[in-house]
Length: 248
Image 1 (cartoon, rainbow, N blue to C red):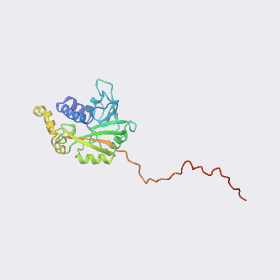
Image 2 (cartoon, rainbow, N blue to C red):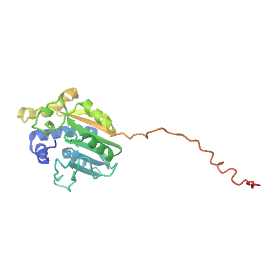
Image 3 (cartoon, helix red, strand yellow):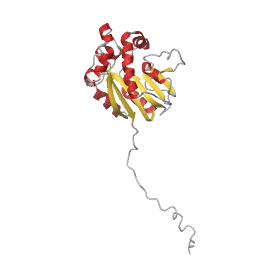
């Protein structure tokens, strides 16, 4: 179940809680990818709150928004880089993307396997992707006041198993959104402190979302490898000039 793009925009850009969520997610992502110099960066779902830091140094930035969600122009003050696409049929060349961010994409799709296959296809050699999904045990997945309360929440094990099944190699993970999903002023003022404290708590228990970085695994050729010995190239024409006896 995809949320409407207007609801997502209103949450992240027009609500105090959404701006706090944006700040928390972006800070954790920047720890993994502080820059994307000369890289092609794509965000799928509603990843635009996390793409802005890469607009300055990336070779190209693309915001891919699924048709059931809808699309909005972004960024507002620059040339538009967002595009409406089918969930599992992206208008991108194979191996084009260097870095990919999925936010509000994997947990809301009805075809997670096909979506992951498409993610794998467009990533180039050495490409990396960050998958951000609601933590099943967290408070944010239990509240429909935020976009993380919709769709299919995950445990860390479930997410990593699914990624491995579709050709990704999970490399590291973290969590974010430790503060409660509420607009109350006390919690909003304490939000940054709670996020710092939350890093010392096991992410499987307290974080509102999981953030998993995974690389593209290139499968080796399948089947039996047959080795053949090649004759010495210097002797391969040996005897070709010898006279041939004529039949009697």
